[in-house]
Image 1 (spheres, rainbow, N blue to C red):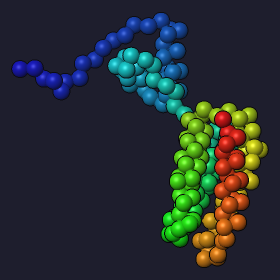
Image 2: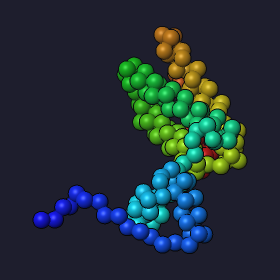
Image 3: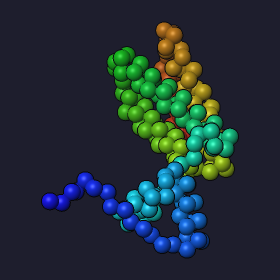
Image 4: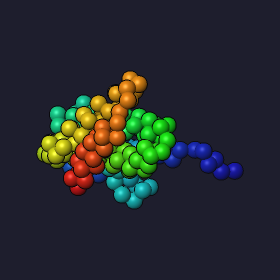
Amino acid sequence: MIDVERDIKLTVRVSLHERTELRQRAFKAGLPVAVFMRISALAGAPVAPMPPAPADLPDPCRKLLAVAHGTVSNLTQLHGHASASGAPLDRVCPLLMEMQDKVRGLGLSVKAGAISEAQASEILSSGLLAASDQTNVLAEALNGQQAAGNTAWHTALTAMRSALGQIA
């Protein structure tokens, strides 16, 4: 009878340099060396490094991440208000969803460490910060039961669409 639940231990011989390299890669991936080697061997490729923690990101990246979180939240709230108000305002719901997806993707890129400090600064100065502020003001007004005219909606959404259009 064969015991398929039994662990089989393997020994790997590596040079001191290779051992150091394996330990560094495993540390970057946030895994023990044995787990790193097992996953790498089974996947056929090395495990990717672990993304940086938000606290370890440079200041522009942290700021961009905070702007992305706030903007996604505000766009979600605006979507709710637009869909609840009915025609003709509910026609902007697809645009709001599209912008929300793009901003969420931007935030995920920052979290993954795919956006450099220089890129984050460039994105923030391209108008995203001002557009985010406008959507925040609009969402706060609507959440506070204040009436917001079509001009307020148009201004905020046009600014956000323009800012997102400048991001590559």
